[in-house]
Amino acid sequence: MQLAAIIRKELQLLSRDVHGLALLFVMPLVFILIMSMAMKDDFDRRSGVALDVLFVDQANLEVSAAMLADLAGNELFNLVPLATAIPGSAFTAAETAVGADQYSFALRILPKAFTSLDAKVAEVTVAPGTSREVTQLFVASLRRAMAKQRILLMEQEIKAEIPEAQDYDFMQVSGAEDDELIAISYGFQADTVAEAPTSVQQNVPAWLVFSMFFVVVPLANTLINERQVGTLRRIRTIAVPGWKLILGKIVPYYFINQVQVVLMLLVGVWVVPLLGGDRLTLGDSFGGLALISSALSAAALGYAILIAVICRSTEQATTLGGAGNIILAALGGIMVPTYVMPEFMQSVTVVSPMSWGLQGFLDILLRGGGVMDVLPEVASLLVLGFVALGVALVAMRRQTV
Image (spheres, one colour):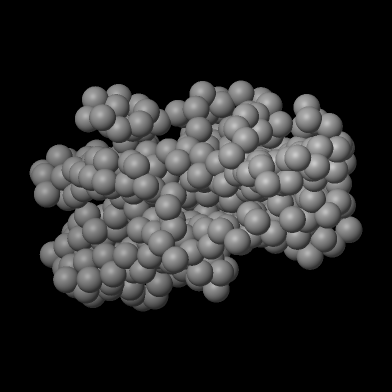
């Protein structure tokens, strides 16, 4: 009965906090719409940052090496030998690394490349976070390099047999860029994916994660106000344990977080396409989505309760909580996608719980993963949430002694 009364009281306070609720729902909605539309066409174009291409040359021919050298001449692509990046590994390791978005592409020059006119030359695996536009650019560059080498081979053979052709410009020959000579696949974990990833699938989960952590503002404000006016002291006089006070505040905000998840995903599925953007694909694991959203909520609420307990005023809580969220978002790949960051900054993102939550959502929405795929992120978020709640309980007991 005590817990139910505390939850009911918290719901009444929430219903009166129009500005706090607007912050939790309107802010992410605006960010999702603006960022998804603004980044629609060139989301994955990296200004001044080369796209990493993990490659292996199984043909080991002079012509295949020349093709790779031609491709490496494009400043947009940074070719990384598989033997250097993952020593002693098969090409499946490259596909796994690309599937985890560690590289933009995996390129394999096939053993029988250039042995005949119809021999398949290469296989390309595309990372989940690489857009259609960048994929088309890479494949076009690869086909151009391949065509150049095929034409040079033809030129050598023809000129050896027909001396009269010595002055003929074979680089004008067309038709060498046969689409069937390069196989393209996407580095998703699922067997089927509705469509290639888009900016919507970065921005919807990113700003959703950001908004879930912003429960710190209304939650901390209500808890601090109750402490300042003596409400918490009066409740404690009737022997209500501290864990009930905290749980009574967590439950309503947990459901608010889940409503945020549902509404923002629906915005990506229905509203963004109406404005001309791409449609969000939800993957195949609603259980995985529910699990990662619940774990993320636990971490966000633990963080919010801890801020509320250690801060002495609503101004302090708003400043500390808001600034902390912005820092975590900047580090966690929310404001700037992780793969655009320099290598040093990419290694720093692991310290942000927002990054854990974002990667969990991307495992489902982009990589076609399921419950098992999000368990590492779920475990990390739950540990953080419970540790923060434990520290908050200890601090609350000391404040009442």
